[in-house]
Length: 219
Image (cartoon, rainbow, N blue to C red):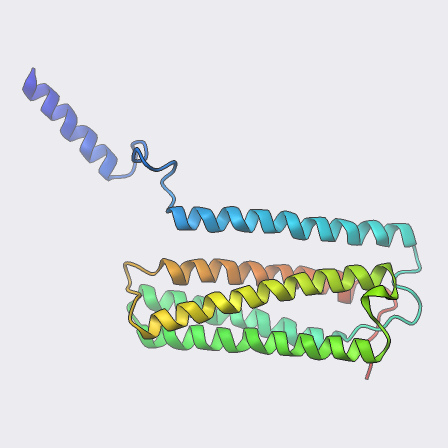
């Protein structure tokens, strides 16, 4: 009887070892707690951006063909450059993650550094865009379109800033030798967040800049 129990226990141990049994007593799922936390945070942020996009579409439908107001100018060129920068930064972020998984610390360092530089460049160009719009008299109190425009782009810019802070932390830890092919959760979480920020901007650029009738870039 004892031998049978021992055999059953051994079978259960093997079963759990291969990941088919229930999670450990102190864990609610087999997903790493840090990864689960980041995914839940991103889901909450999707809801926040969803609320802003809902407001954008509501105001657009209410205004009909007069959207945006006549004379409204958006710097599509600057925003287009920023789009290329963020899309490129996704590739460098992916390069960094793949590098650490292969034990390539130099690739990790360069990937994080390039991604951080492009993120800061994006913020710098966005500040330039705001200055340009302010010079043209396009400010948040200009109207409904201006309010939702600055709300969306400003919210996204804040997320880029948070992403840049995460990248800076990951880069400092990399220089101190904290990551390895087996343990690199900090890099992975930063990458997931950064890709989320990039996807949001592509959607924002397409809807607000490219599909806004009448919006044209000032020289």
